[in-house]
Image (cartoon, rainbow, N blue to C red):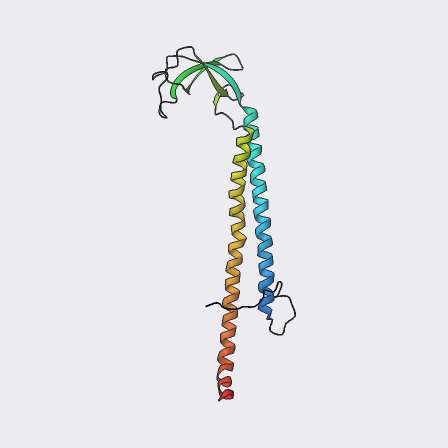
Length: 193
């Protein structure tokens, strides 16, 4: 069974109408405010998060330097081993730091790497091992993902607050209607009989 509601009227809450209640106008302005706050909060949080992540990853990329290290002892495993678990094994490597001192550390290499085999590593400004920094493309993807999460979380706050406020306005409107009905209902019944 279809219910005909008639054509939708845009901005009906602000049009002059003898049946328009003050609560309708308040509800309309609350909706406008909630939408604006939701858009502003989400946009501001998303842009801020994206800038922060990109800045941090750019700084991390500038602080890391590629270096060649050499395997100290034969790496465990067989060279040419297949399978996901055999892709890389931990072994000790040695490299020369920017200050000229020899450093050693543990890195992952291909199984069976021979002693003295060159391995690419990343170091910080002091010559300590560091993680491989994100490429500009990886940084952009990571920044976009975190910005989306931040924007969604920030936009959810005014949206949820607006929903609660609109529910409260609706309860208040129904309570006033109930009060009016209890006052006028008995008189209306006498008039029709």
